[in-house]
Amino acid sequence: MSPDLEVDTQALQACVRPLLELSATVRAAHPPATLSTPRWATSDAAGALATATGVRGGLLATDLAGAADRLAAVVRDYDEADEQIAGRLRAVR
Amino acid sequence: MTEVSITYARLRATDPDRWLAVAVAWRQHAATAGRWAAQIAARIGRITAAWTGAAAEAATAHLEKLRRVAVQIQLHCWSADQALSEWAGALRRARALLSRGVEIATRAGLRVDDDGRVTPPVAPWFGQAMAPIQDALRLAGAADAEATARLAELADSLMSDLGAAPPPFPPPPAAPARVAVWWAGLTPAQRFWLIATEPELVGGRDGLPAATRDLANRLLVDGRIDLDDPAGPRSYLLRADHDHIVLASGDPDAASNVLTHVPGMAADQPRERDRAALVAARATALDPATATSAVLWLGYDTPDTVPEAAGRDRAVAGATALRQFQAGLRAAHSDQTGRFTVLGHSYGSLVVGSAAATPGLEADAVVLVGSPGAGVDRAADLAVPSVYAMSSVSDVVQYAAPAPDALGRDLTATGLAPVLGPAAFGLPEDELWHGRNPVDDDFGARVVPSQPDAGHSGYWDPGRPALDGLASITLGRV
Image: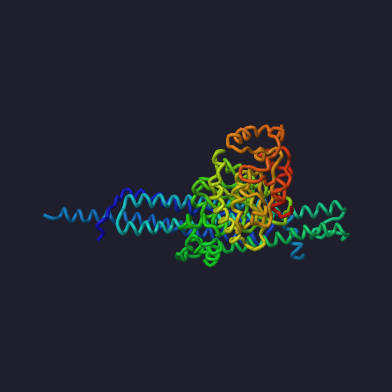
């Protein structure tokens, strides 16, 4: 039981879209390209770091989308629970 | 082809500016990741305002973890920027050496073939031309290995877990050397964890690497300070708090020569930064084989008025901080061969003199420029291996007056000094406000000449003798 539970589901719902948009932005970002001509060992290392940065960004994008989805589910769950409880209480004679 | 000839061909074909552009692109990507982190933080704020309870806490904790991932990406991008900026700087120096060798060979009627060999091998020009070419190839090869290792470590740590909290900092007033040893014992993940979570502890801590402090301080200032000249050496922000700023041009931990520039009254940060960078640039031009970094040290409360400059309190307080900072520079330096020079201009020379008045200032040389006195009467009273002094004959400070009002009048007349020279003020005083004139013979410093029309602020004028003198001192060539 959470005696301090308070929730404004509309305000929470308003956070879902920005999180999804941020996820898309992060996924679309490209780390800097390396220089391969002439090729130094640094060229390959910079390329490998760019790849790793892209992968890390991709994982972050996925996590952000997941967080947005869970937040949307929370809003649905709260609204449904409120509706169900309200229905039960209305049914009392 | 041998490895040497391959390196020679690569170096000839490499444009350092293109690598510098890659470094700048990483810096821009760091800014992008910083915006991601800020946007996640903004969502956390909205959610916290709209939702309370255990589930809300779990949700915001998860988002906070994602924010830290964005910060980690940001830090790694800045680190890549650091590594590639140093790489580009080393390439520039290597190519300068290469040009020097080719020029010597050409002047002597020799030629440098496509493998980097000077032909025919005629003494003495052959050796004089080959030496800088070989230095260039060594420098490029070492810098390539260094950048590769740094970038590979970054790729590894970026993909690793954020890590657990490291052991706590050695409590103040731990010596910088102890802090450096403690830091060296952390894993890369622990270091990044600390920078991301406690940047205020990392940013100002003497003894930590300059590259580390720069990351922490960039997080703290969050773009509010204009730090970087896209065409110049990378800036390392070593401190930014309480109106104090310490900013290095180039990585001081990796430089063979490190100049700490301590300004005086009414110090203007951009102007003083340019002055420090001019010395480093000139030193690099004179000796491309070694890296030179210049640190603008505004780690004390500079006097804003002549009456404030008449007192020594600010210098004494600044001296303690300067000693600590220099100890940190030495402790964090990558090897034991670095040369450290501390330059004090105007009131800054009193700060430097106060710092060197007792043993323990980590400096191979101090330079007192346009000094109103360094708080001592003899160079021998300063506990450093070498003491240099420089004052232009037209510098009003050495005609200093015994009272603030009188000096104020003289300072107002400084604009006339280059025209009128000493005639405007009479003969230089032996006894200045804060002690014996450091360019006086009896003081015993090695006096390095400057141009007669430098006034109080012309010591950094490009192409003039004073700047060459300061660069030569920084290189240990005087």
